Length: 292
Image (cartoon, rainbow, N blue to C red; front, side, top):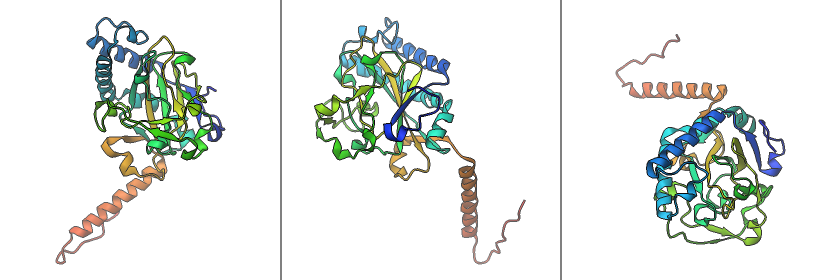
């Protein structure tokens, strides 16, 4: 299900794949990640073989944070998606916000601790108006691919019960949490986890899915380390609590419609006029600004 324009049945499926427009920029991100890895472990010769050089979890998560800091500062994740804004505008509307600090994931083969496991973001306060764009930086095949339960996004949260657990290696707001790891994981039932089907996203493609869909992977079963990113998008006019979404600069503007741009200019003029009138004293005659 690969297309430049999302399929009309997204409302029923909850996900689609499409080929990225800027493969060259994707390769630049891959090269940048490898350079950062080699600054920490000079022997690493490819992203795919990363797990052969980094065995220790302590070293692994320190390296992941080091590379994540570079990835966030570079702004390359949002830039990559900006070149596919036509896809997202046809899918979500003309006014869009994008996650400013997208997650960089590194999942070594056979290491459950490297994955967030199978989950549903609405269980953690995510909005059904948000979409996540998963972009792999390595090609792992089906055994290492992120999976989904098609259609699960239109079922209530109660359809997927869970058990709240603890992750002793993660605290709210710490480095691990900033990288997208959960401090209180909500473990879903084995029978629901078994229903997850690999989406089969290849290098050069993006997987787009609703935050309400059940998705993830328990463990990377391929023989290749999966490097990937998750970047969230939302319509700028969505009926959500924007004060929560924009805390710590979580979202930034990606695209603005002409209508919204005109409305903002009007609102700015109104605000300036109110401020001008408020500054007038009882002894000062305030004139209405003349038109240009």
